[in-house]
Length: 584
Image (cartoon, rainbow, N blue to C red; front, side, top):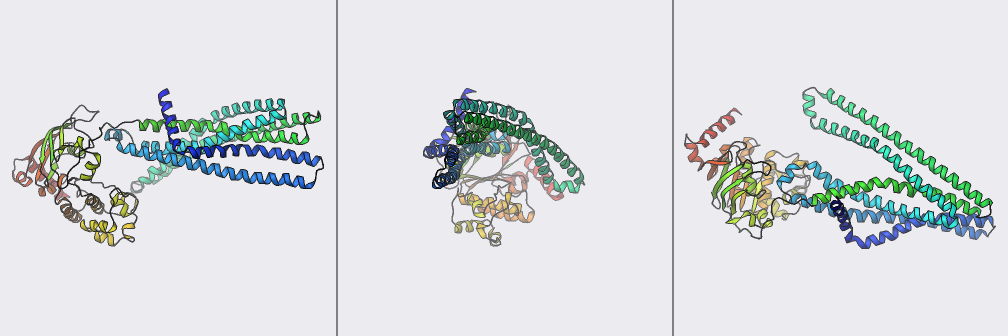
């Protein structure tokens, strides 16, 4: 526990280290923001005492003008401290978000398999936001509140030690009461937030299934569930609000009693001739000023805990190490790349049973090999091995004679590419979707030529803003075939030597399939290709086909030769595939 605590506090300190100058300036501004409210009552005392002494009106106007000027300076100081704190906080936490996101992307499939996207989003963004609030709210309010509290007690003690002691005692007791009251209110507030989250979750779930709910006549049930969740949220909200109002009432009563006590005590001191009338007002005003720092200090304790928890969670995330070792420094040559799997086996870390066993495969440069087999035969796992998303538990995967584990990551990602069934498109311009936000830079002429190469020139011409047109979220508005062709265009920009193609035409109609297959031929020309096939008819255009069953190669050879052999397993699967397509 001590090590983890030290780790996350080191993380917070590391975030602020690049902004030490700004932190120094912020410290000066915070000191000013805490000091200025304490000067105002001093000016008011001077005004009252001078007025009682019948001084010249010019003196009173000077004091009043100084008081107004002090108020303006105080407001400007608050704006400056808020701006500086936000700038430092968001600059630091944005850097933390980038660091955490990059680290998450570098982690292997085992981590992502065990961690949901929602949990990652909460860690990378939610916890970073909690830390930002810690800097912008907690640090500023705690520092200002602490300085103000100390300043009020010191100034009142200077005026009269008895008043100072009474005020310090009152501040401590009030802080204890506030903390106890807030602890009492926390469960109700937590229940209210949970109920509100349940309402949002209910709405999201019902909207996601709106078509099915309407089609099945279950709309009434959906509305009833929403009303039930809303009623629960209303009840918990009322309960939480009642407790918050009770806290406010108790605090108001406490400070009213404190102010009354200070006023009576100051009046007694004045009657004894120990303090002036202006000092009576001064002590009363300081009691009112005390409320803000006491409330701020007690309110922010929970935020400190949240920020510390967020920092601990991010620190824990950053301490996660990839199970996949870093690659070496070798690079791949230009042109088509030969591929070889030598006695490759693989078993997932949490599974003792091997998914692949003793895979031996040679793919010459420029050849096309189709991987076929039933679901669970190991096709996807073999594809992950070829992309080095996982490493074999036995054997070696070599590309151009180099073990994938010896390749530099940049060379591997540049020379080995993949197009999956579900192409990930983003809610941004066509240009950014093709270049992946500049990761594969290309000018507009090159992008236009690549889209024409895959047969999307007509589609591009119909876009209202051409390459600057923003696509819908997840590629909304595009057909499955257009999305696949955009995936092809991305690969064209990289010009890899080895391509893994996860059957691009399996989700499209026959007419679109012809377009996709034509683009596939252009994409694979002069490149080595491994095709994971779902429609077996598509591998008839390959040079070689490999049939997997239970993680082993049970048959391989030229596809047309195997198809012509009535005794081959491939021929039997092909006949079944043709029967299924005929039914469809």
